[in-house]
Length: 360
Image 1 (cartoon, helix red, strand yellow):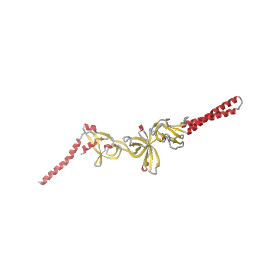
Image 2 (cartoon, one colour):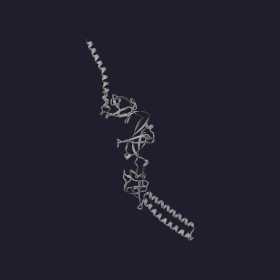
Image 3 (cartoon, rainbow, N blue to C red):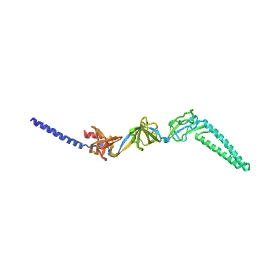
Image 4 (cartoon, rainbow, N blue to C red):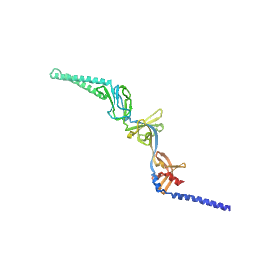
């Protein structure tokens, strides 16, 4: 009797085990997304894209040297006035500073002397011409007098040009003017300062900032990957949610002996002048590895039990749980080594709810 009872229990257990998968399959087959859930679900098609890798570098923003001019004092003297400050935007030809200069006073004196000598030379020429007409002198005297006038006229033109270059006036003042329109990045001049014409320091540095450079350091192990024209993405602390795009336009083929790094220069447009010289920057360079691979948004991946899955969407009544092998996650996308084919659709929003419903 006992053996008969055991046989009945085993048969019941066996029957229960055989029916459970069937019940689960029926449950899964009956899973259908409601219209409300369908409106919340987002999908994206699997795309085949070139395989790319990235390299992250640290750099800093600097002005474009081709759009930067350093202004030096052309004469020595006392600074009477300063009309531009650090960070100001100045127009080409705008007065930046006024210098009271002994050198300009000397040139003004030379101009006055030259004017007197020119008037005397013109008078001598007139006398020589009259005497030649009256046959009291030779034509040679007229030619000599004319040459003297021409020499004094040339000296006058030279002195005027010098004074124009110095921005000088009759009060022995020299005006420092902006050679280009741009922003004052450096200012090394103050009212009352004594300047020397042979000073090696610029009194102003002016730069246009509509285009800018980012100088980035490349470790010795990554130098072989550097190429001209590489696309670069720039991020800064000031604008954490904004990405600026540029490209590598110069590779400095010299290593810093201290840091063992090489610099590369990234050129980029400075929209709305958001990037300021001196800012620290994070640089991401993109490299093509060759070949292509299926890609999906990285947010579509589900990590469970040390494996990665995606929810493949066919229609609201047919959704598959698919295990995938991820080659690399890079930014917002993931490269899929196996498990998906281009054209298939994966769920990118609310996929965890559906995964739990189908796999509990």
